[in-house]
Length: 178
Image (cartoon, rainbow, N blue to C red; front, side):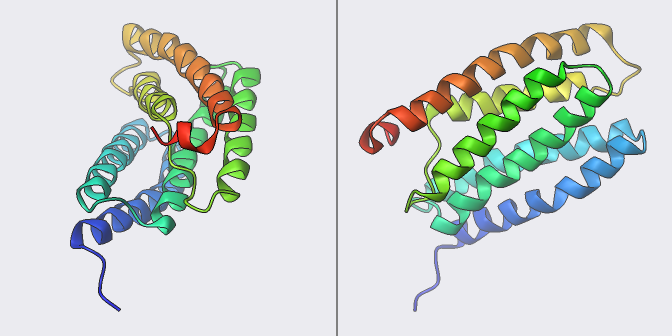
C-alpha cells in the first residue's frame, strides 16, 4: 500500500502533537505558570492552522486526522475555558453551554463517515476562541486592556459556536461541505 503524501503525514503528526499539549497546558494553568500556558496555547493554535494548511496541500486530510483534529481543538480550548470559569473570569453557564455544543457536535461527527468536516462558521469560532483565550490568559502583568478585549471576543465566539452547531445539525450534508 502506498504511503500518504508527506504533507498529510506531517498534518497528522501536528494533530498528535497538539493533543499532547493539553496536559502540560492544564498543569501550567493550575500551577500559575501563565507564560508557559500562554505559549502552549499559542503553539496549539498555530499547529492547528499549520496542519489544516498541510492537509489541504495534500489534497485533503486523512479521515483519522479529520476525527482527531476537532477533539484536540476541544482539549486546547475547553481546558483554559474551564480554568477561566473556575477563576471567575468567565461565567460558568457560558462555558457549560459551549461544552454542551462541543459534545453535540462530537456526537454528530461520530456518525459521519468523513469525520464531519468543519464548516466556515466552525472554523471562525475556533479562531475567535483561540484569540479570546490568548488575550484572557495574557500573563504580561495582567494587562487590563488585553484581558478585557479577550472577554469581549469570547461572546461573538459563543454566538458563532451556537450558530455553527445549528448549521451542522440542520443543513443537508452537501450544504455543510461548501
